[in-house]
Length: 548
Image (cartoon, rainbow, N blue to C red):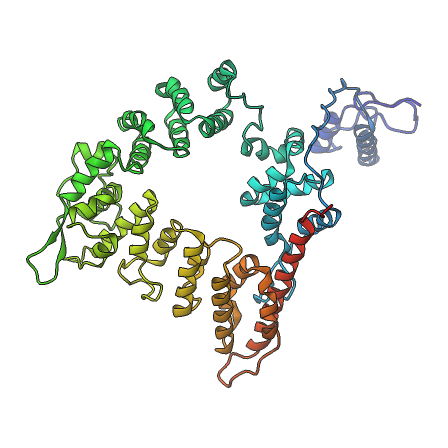
């Protein structure tokens, strides 16, 4: 039985009209059968039906006709993954997590079912910690999930392993895996393959070159910097900026000469990044230049009854300041002098101030009054410097005690600045400070601070959050105001805290001034929290290797 191609009219059916080419039929339909009829069909009342019959026959031919094509090359087999397979229970759990897509209702009521997709990052982190390989059947769904959520990609691609890259080369929707994985587009040369390194750096795609420089920087910072220097002058400005950013990893004094040269770059963004990196090296020449400039603006007036910091902001931004990364043009709404002062203080080594301000400690310096409303600007710049230089002593001084007012205290810094300062401290100290803040101020201002705490939350922090949620419930308001904190608690509370929450599952007696139905909504929210915590405990148990 032969097959008819789309280009060959059928002659086997005498009753079928002669169709002609598809283009001819389209032209006839556009002109109308009064002006033109299909080939072999006379004008008259039967012409429209004949046109439709011919179009039907041609449509069947177009769909059924097949032109033989050259066979494509078969893909190489998927690479082996030597890691141990998931335990069966954990594999089933992964399938459930990838299949679940719960959404909140329009009323803000979520029900008691856990949001499984929000648990996927935690599950992936635990699976990667145990070194498991992803089940091959789960890879498409895993890649789809990572495609839709960039925050999942590092952990998902690590778990997916080499087979994910094999699949990504076959499906354009998953090409992000090739860009996101070092060596995804091609295997990176080893540290001793000098010629391959040189060739890939000279001839590779931009993503391949970024991956090469990043990998080389992690192994040998000096070799990566020297490789970058070989083509620096010929790179595009946007590429120079990306390459320069890779020097953040392993940044050290040996990078200073290269970064000093970058201060003269023709791109303002490259100059600014180079200056930022140099200011993160407290011993650099740029840091010392900034210390001299900032020190000339800030001093202690000892003639007053209480020693007071006096500030004289710069009156101009000279060429030397601009070369060292100071942006001359202030943003809209900012005064030029305060804008310049903030940049100088931010880039100066923090050790400058103890020497400059009478040998005082960071805590003593921050406690000093500041004249002429300069305190906010000065303390904000010190905050940025403490974060950039990762200085815990200054961070503690600027944070103040957790019982201080939300935007006050010795440092007079905002909650957003406090969150950044907390990130410079150890996990235990961070959790203890945030727990103290919640005990004093409750949860309404704590969301940003909770976001920088290590997971699972330490017991004091977990207890503080649960106690604050209980207080909010007793106040009679709806739980929706605390939905962000409740969502964090579902992901961050230690699963062992589930038992302490059982007493909160019952619907409480509502006070007279309570919002209608608030008690049942709180009960529902706590039920979801407990269910999620127990689910997390089960997930971790399923991923724990069985003892021999």
